Amino acid sequence: MKNTKKHTRFFLVGLLSLYVTTSYGQTPKKSENIPSEIQDIVIRELVVAANQTEKYLPLFREKKIGIVANNTSVIFKKNTVNEPYVHAVDSLLSLGVNIVKAFAPEHGFRGDVDAGAKIKDEKDLKTNIPVTSLYGANYKPTQEQLQGIDMLVFDIQDVGTRFYTYLSTLHYVMEACAEKGIPLFVFDRPNPNAHYVDGPVLKKGFESFVGLHPVPIVYGMTIGEYAKMINGEKWLKNGIQCDLKVITLENYTHETPYSLPLRPSPNLPNNKAINLYPSICLFEGTNVNEGRGTEKQFQVFGSPYLPSDLYPYTYTPVSNFGSKDPKHLGKKCHGLDVSQTPKLNEIDFNWLIDAYKATPKSENFFKFAAFFDKLAGSDELRKQIIEGKSFEQIKSSWEADLSAFKKVRAKYLLYP
Image (cartoon, rainbow, N blue to C red; front, top):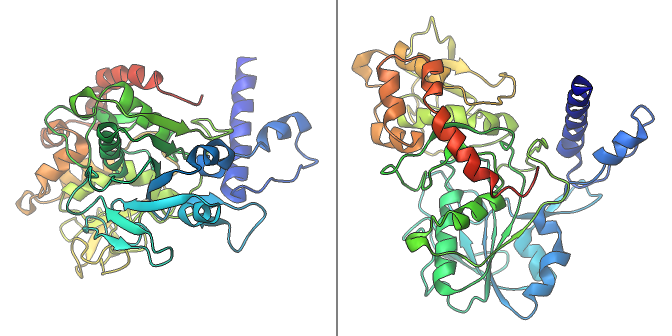
């Protein structure tokens, strides 16, 4: 009986994957080949928070609304193919919501700015709404910037990794709202890497904009659950708490496969890049290019220093969308194409360890060691790799911290 339940569960997940990754809000038709009792479960539509206007529009009536948004802040349309979604700001304005200001995180309000590039204050050309940068002069909204706002909305697609900077933006927005006494609405969205929890937990003293909290690299929570954890664990300055309201997802679990309908940032172009991102991103702190400057960002890696006999795949990074000045620009890199790797259910640092061993010591593999440590969450991983420890040994050193984190995480889960 136990095995039957397990196989049924995977069967359902497989069906859900087929549905969620192809429908984007359209209800699939029933099939004669699938039992009706199973189809009744599968065809329940996954509904993102932004689409559930009945839950928040009455609360926004006669209020001045601010919104933290980017290109992923969309409301899905039903039964449409050519225009399957509309930007939430555009939609809310058409519904009569008085949006008085928008705030832009890294990559900008429309999501077309390079990683790390500073964002300027501007007016959105389409709506004429003033857009205040949260990735320029300040990461945290000032009290002056929040002036005249009655309620603030945070609606940004996350990818489930600690070093994705939208988490830090969320933290500072919550802190500013708490200090100003402004309610914050987080519109929840699925996490494409919610199916596992793994990686080293960030240690005290290594906090930065690519990691503010004591969580593992992959934390297995939606952005709404994560906001509740920030609040509940009192991680904001002086332990203050935000007046937080999470608009939840409907018909979602952490095992629900989810294919993002548009890229969450310029260098995460597809599902494979998003799945490999937790394992490949630490190359950012080394002398190895992680696919920036190609069309396979975070799906290939290489450097001019890796030996061609071990790393036969070659490419030359160029200036392109999302990366105007990639590492090793114009230089031939030897590496690996890992884009055909089966879906990962855990972090894999074997590629990182092997590349370190294969790089001549004279070429300084950990060229950006301080940044590597910020991404890893401490200097322990770098030291373990230099000491020659195997990935199995390294992974076992995370277990106690991971176990402790999972107990904290459990308190804030909104979905099974």
